[in-house]
Length: 251
Image (cartoon, rainbow, N blue to C red):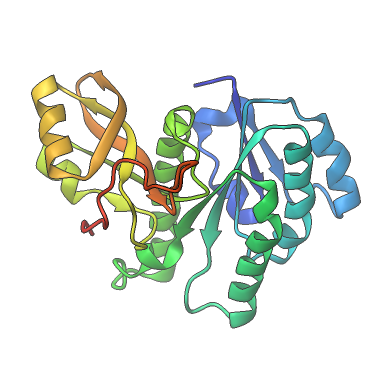
């Protein structure tokens, strides 16, 4: 785990989505700890400076929407590369909450380097037979897997303004494909990330089956892939970056 990254959970959704493996570099900003923006600011100012700061939050939350701009402004001023992992509301939630989520992200767009979208609705659509409490537990587990994978890939990612994240593991390559978790259904230019495989031949099979550019891999006892889905990814000359697969067809 890199000491060049810290992760901050903002609000209830952010607090619940911080992987335990990152406990030594994680911080919580919640309404029971800081009651106002004025109380949040000195705490954020005191946090160690790192190359990358990952903020996990639900921008639909009333508390998160109030404190997020000040948090992002602080890290932007300090010159830290900042990612927001945005856990988006279910379609069934109020229009007011959905509007608040998009308005909040719009307000911090110029203060962050990348926005990572995690769509709760995509998970819920595959769990329609589950009880609500079971579904929430399963979604939280999947979000943790996605964020873990994202944190493991962050220093290898190119500069992208918007992205989704994915994660999968299995005992075989077929299981790997079947268990793939995508955080959003938006069209993407491709997938990049890291992998653990049992041999080089299987790595080649994975990259031939899926539109993935593996930036780093290790040989081990498991099959796993984690990384990012690229959106609106243009380099300085305005040409699409690689990989250039126009859509992700795996669900």
